[in-house]
Length: 140
Image (tube, rainbow, N blue to C red; front, side, top):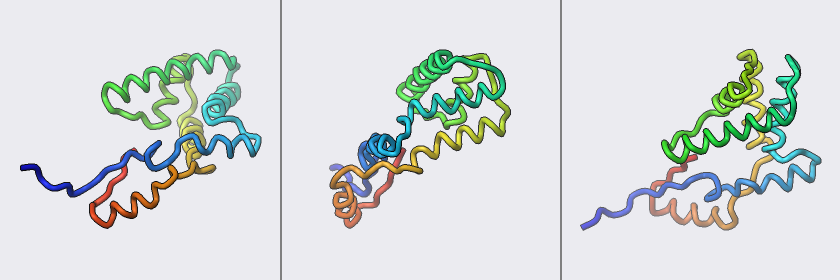
């Protein structure tokens, strides 16, 4: 006999929150898409110390993204933004002062909340209904 269901967990992104629904809002405000803005922020930060090309930054971001995907899919590990930046910087053979790195990571992370994405249509009612019967948790 199986035990009765006592709790339900949800993944936040693309289950409760429509991850890319903020991109049209960004475009309407004349802002770059988040992936391009992250690259641009690092490009600016590095050029404040020593020149780097956009192509170099893009290649380093691509390499870090591949390493992140491997860690996430193979080991279920999600690197904090600062760690992803360190991997990107290592790929470039560069570094930033720790306070600048932390500020950059904060700026990149804030992009997920400064212009918030929308909830998945209908999810509010589903969560409300389930909350009446089960304990709920959200993972991200």
